[in-house]
Image (cartoon, rainbow, N blue to C red; front, side, top):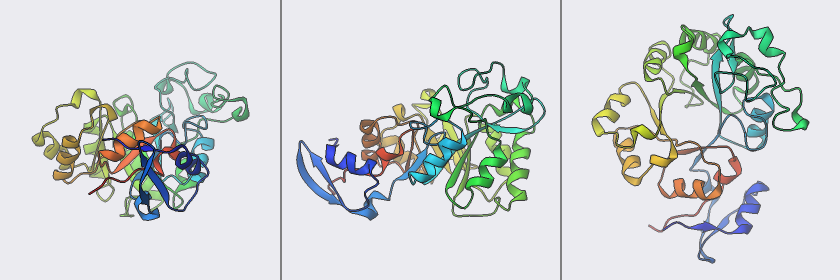
Length: 286
C-alpha cells in the first residue's frame, strides 16, 4: 500500500530540512526516516530544476545544484555549424523566442535567442547554453546525466561529446558522476565504444512495457542503466532490471504522489522536475 507523506514533511522538504522525518499512513506516524534512508534515492533534476526555472538553462542547472540534486540532466543537440548546445526539442520554437530546427540554425543564431522569458520574466535573457559551458560550470559540483537528443540527426555527435569529455579528463572512471543516455540505442553503443569507462543508459518509452529478460540482457552488454517512462514501472520490471545488473531511473516525476509511487517500487533514482519531492519518502515495513 502506498504511504502518504504528511503536509508537514513536505513543507520541511521544501525548506531543505536535514533532520529525521516522520512517514505517515492514513494520518498516523509509522516510522521515523533517518537522513541515511532519505539519501538512498538518487535525485536527478530533469533539464535542471525545470519546475522552478526555464529548462536546460544555466539558471535551471544552478537551481538544481542549489536544491542539492545528485545529478542535473541535460539534453544535447548540435547546431548547423557543429556546436554542441543544450536544448530539448529539435526546434527552438517552444523554449525560445525564435523558430526553426536546431540543426538548421547556426550557433550565433541560436545564441541570440531568449530562452527564459517563456517561463518567467525574471529569467528574461537566459541563453541556450553550450555543452562545454555546462560541463565546465558544474563538473565536480554535481553529477551530470547527459542525454544525446536525436543523435540520428547529427552525425558525429557521439565523438564530439566524447572529445569534449576527454579534453577535461571526464572520461575516466569517476564514481558515476557522468552518465550518458539516449533513446537511440545504437548511439549508446557507439558512445560506449568511445567512452568505455563511463556508464551509459538506454531510455525507453511505453512501447517497452513488456520488455523481456533477454532484451534486458542485450541492453546490459553495453548499458548500465535502463531508464523507462515511469508509467511502465512495476515491481517485476525493477526486479528484472536489477537481475540484469543494471540500475533503473524512471522519468519524469512531476508530483509528490508520483515520486512516492516510485519510492515504493524500489527504483534506484528518480528523474524529476521537482527535486524537493525526492528528498523525503516513506519507509516500507520489512
